[in-house]
Length: 258
Image 1 (cartoon, rainbow, N blue to C red):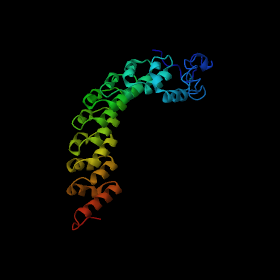
Image 2: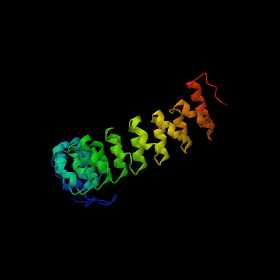
Image 3: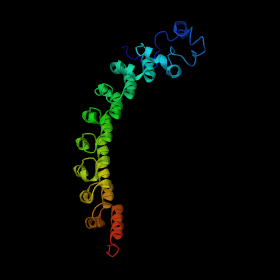
Image 4: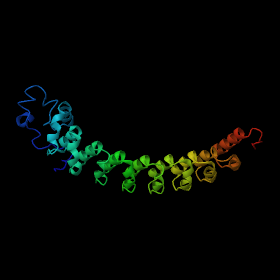
């Protein structure tokens, strides 16, 4: 398959009148069903090509092997699903992205190891849940973030030790509260803040001594009352205030040091 020309470059014969070589000159053009300035499959304009296939989707399949990458990519949006499977190995990533967005979830697995990250991200959004774990080791962290968003809770701990912070943040947002223990000591403060906001009381108590005051502030709202008394002497005023308010709400008869 021909590969993409540089962005902004004209395709071959871009300046030639498209109607002179068009297969539809005597049919669609003659009948007013296309227009070289607005609805034209021979134009080197994505918008005009898209308008053509939108009005004549039955013609899309014949352009799946076209030499112009954009024409193939747009044709792939409108061609019958059964016809676009051959494009999983197309030389242009834009074409393969369209294919990844359309193939059935079981068929899209053929693009699981595609060289283009956007193709793999699309695959991760659409892959069958049973096969999703196969992409948990993808080299691109954004692919793994999508995997973390979709994995079942039972398989999610597989990504709790991911080297990328954004992946672990996604895991921290989705894991059941009882499973957050393994992220309490995460090296990234943004992960620990999420854990502090969602954790069960014992884990929240551990986070009351965190180096980050926002982590401690969130932990105050979930830790056991007896544990947060130590926060009345916290170095951060907002943490001390939150601890005092929580203790007052928790036991109205308890004298809280001022």
